[in-house]
Image (cartoon, rainbow, N blue to C red; front, top):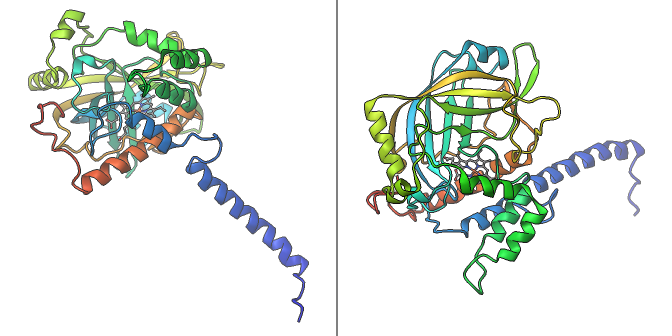
Length: 360
Ligand code: HEM
């Protein structure tokens, strides 16, 4: 018995369904990192970062050493004119956050850290959430996830010598010259003696949408009210392994610490999707709020330990740019979060309290 031939009408119906299935499959593949980039996946980026130091189970795969903080964010009246996000109209928002240093060793001495990080979570009364993670560098090391991955791979020790192969790094620098600019900055940038007097930069661009629907591309930063003081190389060498958190405790015991949150506006032609290029200092800026810190506590017992400061957790009124680093960050932070939370739930994490006293 022969089957009836499909009717023309049902074939026409099947085509859109097949198209939808193909788009869904492509989306899964993209999220999984299998397309758009031959071999680079968030997992691969994470494995490379994880292999480059004294990683400890249960800790972040980067920025492992850190301390939780709490305080408030109060927007300026100008902020509400730039974005309809509730964070810019609610008079004051309770925040929690985390300071960190970038190594994946949670016991790394603070005087080896070239960079300091600040992450903030703002939950507004309309149920929306904004998570921010910034660093003290003025621009990022790489323009693309591929360049960042190449840099990290070249920095891995060669099994034959136990040291990174300088020829590999030379080849990477020739291919991605922006990395050399970052290395030069890291070598010469003064190291602050305090988390409280450091400026933290968002470096990735975001789109603000105002109440009338107009859009502006910005980069944000937290500018400390406490004047920056650099440590001399001698002071740095002599500094305690945990001098950053000790200094923070001392300062907060004396009173709150404040930062002005400032947005810088892109001019036509500014690199929106390349965080390795700073925009000129001459671009207009507006202060959009004040961050006030009143309390710090160890991450082992604080509310920041089990948070993923995913920079794509954004409220209505703030949207991501097409910067590929921003999107890679979100995917990689999720892998790091899942790995560390699994280790914690399986009881595999070291108890950070009391071990060298340093994993705060
Ligand atoms: C492709 C580039 C990047 C990769 C692969 C990467 C990777 C990571 C990973 C794996 C974590 C730990 C996440 C967790 O377990 O919760 C992390 C944390 C962090 N990253 Fe990145 N990162 C990148 C770029 C950046 C940039 C451009 C900035 C700053 C502007 C930044 C700032 C931070 C900060 C401040 C933290 C600590 C957040 C916290 O306290 O939980 N990262 N990063």
